[in-house]
Figure: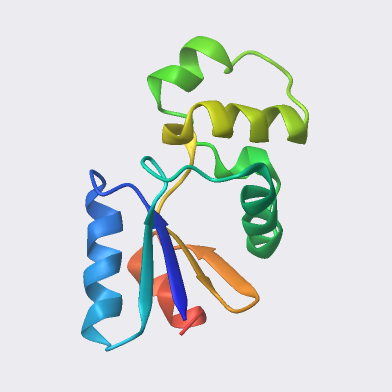
Length: 113
């Protein structure tokens, strides 16, 4: 089972969903704007991505620029910012088994399929 965490307002997320569907993959789609991550889920996904939480931030978002840009934040503080403002999370995130990627560009999906 492949899981896509995405925001349907994002064209890259929609492209990812279409791409995986075209391969006939069993895909579970989670709109994290409507079904927010729990702290445990988000921590696990970040671990599977093998990145620091700050690397998952959409730094061009207005919320980031206004509230967080000039602050030095711990990993825990960044995760809490994601939980309060899920729009800050890079997307789409694709999880398959014990692997995860940020599927931008779509060609990165090859590494997880």
